[in-house]
Length: 422
Image (cartoon, rainbow, N blue to C red):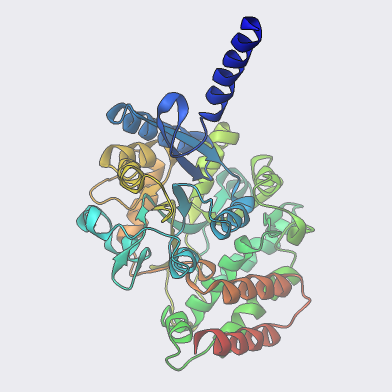
């Protein structure tokens, strides 16, 4: 009987130990509080985040941060499901804008206004995470989109960086004549192709066009400039500017980038995160790499000082976090000056933290372009409400696929904008 009672007591202890769990954010590993932290970045960026997390854990020895990296293309859906299910991570990656605001409107994101110093950040970048004068995220990265190219291929065929669209078409023709894919495009996930529509529209009508359509001030998404932007895209498709099957190629898988690394393609319009990809995937390619700003359109109102830009990562705290103060301290560590300097110097990225000038020569070129910028246009799909943002990506992909006319796409966008924005 004593043996039986002893066994029962031992089993009870084991069961209680198991119930102590290590994954609950209220209990934690070995009695520690656990902060769940989700992000999307591989390579050197992830290393920078890990170093910031390690520093945070040193300051808070009773806390364990559990990091989870989720590839970009799967991340949005996974986070949306977690948010709606009430089990979101304590700290999560966003891009600010309409995408973050969607969760703010659902009361899923913590208001951190009173806990942070606004002057620590680039004002425009921080504005992308402010809604109703309240701060819901801290931006670490500030990006621009440019056209990267292989200097070796350009030199081989006597090509120079194009300043106008017509010069760009001439380059495309020359490359096709020499069996080189002019531009690599991986547009299955739709956002890479969206840069073309945004850039063409801005070059044709100036950056005021989007502000007018978004804020319903007069010009709409069916404006002739949007139709013309789609026509330029279809002209490029018809001139074989892109690799075959581009609408079926996912960006994260890296097939589009491999076309550049291997010399099969000469150019790619992409955010400056591409440099981080190069340094992770094909570091020897960097010596061949250069970039130019999206060309102008003859007679257009836009110019090359007006850039497509984005914030990201923007770190936010879930409102249902059991440790909101600690989670807020973590995102402050993830946007500290030290973290920002490591981020920009080691990953080829710009930072939204003020006063951090890149020491890396290549990244300094991006920084110089931004310093001369007169306007930074945040991506439509990160600014518009989600329903309209998805339609923007869908219709733009259809324009690329020649399955929809630019006029039809513009009319669909304007019809939905009247439903969603008015």
